[in-house]
Image 1: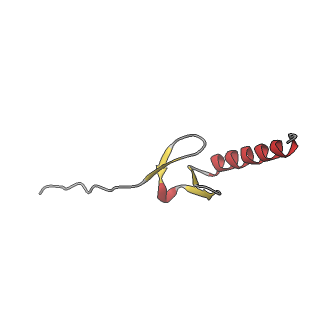
Image 2: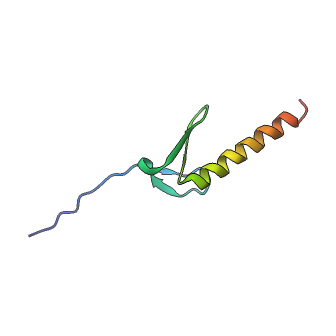
Image 3: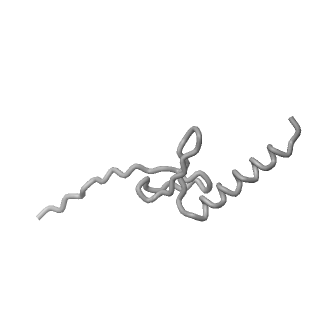
Length: 64
């Protein structure tokens, strides 16, 4: 009896922080203004979120 391998085409996305490729079905997504950012886990999401907050705070402090 021959065993047939099923080819499963999973869509992969890249984590915004560590650049690890993960299946889209298990990634954490955050919809931003212009695009959707994907993360491999909560740790990377928190790093991205904190970095985003720091960037916004710095832009508010700089004179225009």
